[in-house]
Picture 1 (cartoon, rainbow, N blue to C red):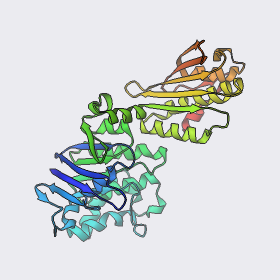
Picture 2: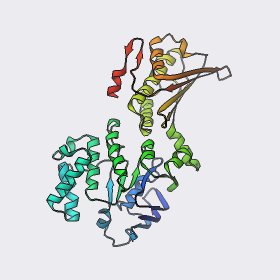
Picture 3: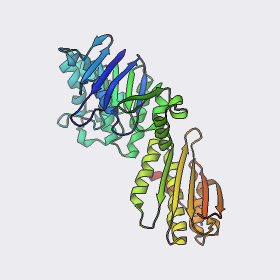
Picture 4: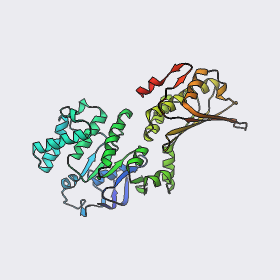
Length: 382
């Protein structure tokens, strides 16, 4: 359906794409992953001709859309784009945003455009917002409108550039639900995303981008479970395991939790389990270990297993032997135990004098209790 032949894209200070070639088949749902700055967004912007390639060819249904004199509007009627920043027209209502392109580019009558727009708003769950303006909507609602606007042109291909990255975590799931539904419709889709469980769930192909091109491609199982190339393996390992060293009491508490939240969001961890992980780390670090060690030297690893929705926290800390079961903070210990399926402590009396604690965090929605205090209500706001 789309054949990309040796495209290169050069900017003044960078060349994100170098001699990239790939074929996209009708009905493919492709997730594009990789580190920042590796050309993921540039690739889909080249396909849509928002940033035409510096050299090379892009063939759409056998037609060279990069050829000199080609009518770009013709390609864009068949290749739709959804942006991370929504790009809705602020001076138009929701329904007007959806009706504009079909009337201007496809010559649809006002009634035809209106009927199609209302049908699509119903599909994304926003029919009642038709007469609202974009600034009256939440981020998740704006992105659902943007997806509906794209569908109004009935494109053969839909390109989505990090469609959830600009959203609050609480709004991500509503947009993902719409994209999941869309992925089952038979449309050809390419999605730039940092949310790996989401990519695994909806895609039949995954492109890992690095070094100016598609460094490795395969099925979700091949890329996420058994990557063959070194850079892919390193990238996937970083996604699967959150690691942090805490070498003092004045560590960046806010930054630590921001990075942890990003890891949990990328792995699509459910709110209840997410809350238990946060609670476990806060009680362990702030309330149990910090009071015990004047100069804490702590290494934290968090590993989430998507297949059984469980999480293992491994914490090593150097110094005297200290089993947290002997802490004087009984409330924090009780809260920590209430989140855990298993806790295992060991101490290695070597020159580094290393304590190690492994905690298996359970999922589910049971209330968390400690010392007679119930914390389950907090889950509702997480």
